[in-house]
Amino acid sequence: MASIFSKIVAGEIHCYKVAENEQFFAFLDINPLTKGHTLVIPKKEIDYIFDLDEQTYSGLMMFAKEVSHALEKTIECKRIGVAVMGLEVPHAHVHLIPIQKEGDMVISNPKLKLSQEEMKEIAVKIASNF
Image (cartoon, rainbow, N blue to C red; front, side, top):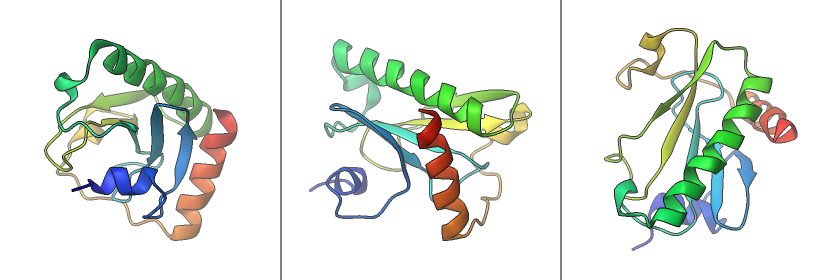
């Protein structure tokens, strides 16, 4: 059964896409910790990030690095935090979270409530800086 992320890649579920290439896809988290909170995934559905072959794993991290540069140009922040938890969705993914302080990375923090228009605007700005 396809994960929700595979359905997003296939265009079956709407997302706020910020970047894409042949192997990887990046889109805004719909329950963001901060503005610009982005998920980066391989298009190939593999549950656990450390089960990725070396080429895919390295490619995912290099793509995440490129996305982080676009985030830094778009969202005012001190750093882009990186997290891999891997339990929420059975599809390897990396969280890129613009942060001002380490506490911004706490996954149990209240999530932002952004309008669809705000999400679209943020995604378009990040994509334009990619």
